Length: 112
Image 1: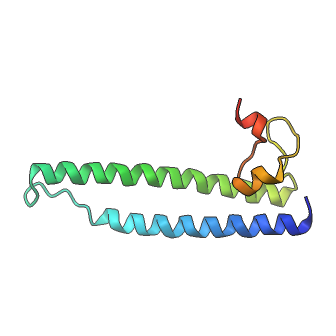
Image 2 (image 1 turned 180 degrees about the vertical axis):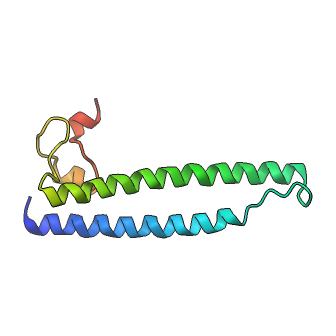
Image 3 (image 1 turned 30 degrees about the vertical axis):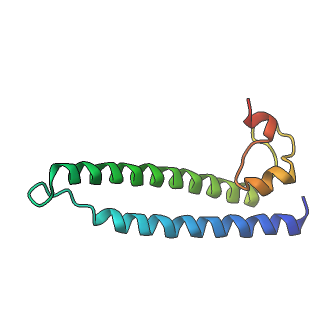
């Protein structure tokens, strides 16, 4: 992988991280507005709010996991192992990295 390609992937990962951080901030702020006050809200409204809250929490967990993967990819860039499969040690194809820049595995190992 060339230095230019590496720099482009680093920029892409940093942009994704910033987008996820902004999404999490907005999600956490909207979740604060979902109070389940049983005195002021009917039973069906509470159930709907609880379901919405559950969906938001699941999305936040997914975003946090993806952010961890991005951080790990940026760390691999720092230690010189970015683009190398963590499982088998072979080079990860540029097409795979373009599709999933934070991937730690080549397509063969990821599909096993």
